[in-house]
Image (tube, rainbow, N blue to C red; front, side, top):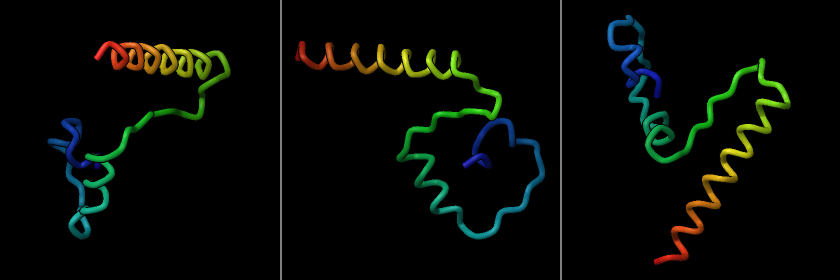
Length: 64
């Protein structure tokens, strides 16, 4: 829900409805922002970073 982001604090915009679904998405999902100019090298970096993160999280979980 971009209307709850600090960048929109002083921006005029119109809201239609309650934005219940956008709030649900904002609070219950993981967003990976991308843009059309991403190339294969950049995508590989993103994938590698996630793989390192999840491997580290799995290693920490095994210590419990």
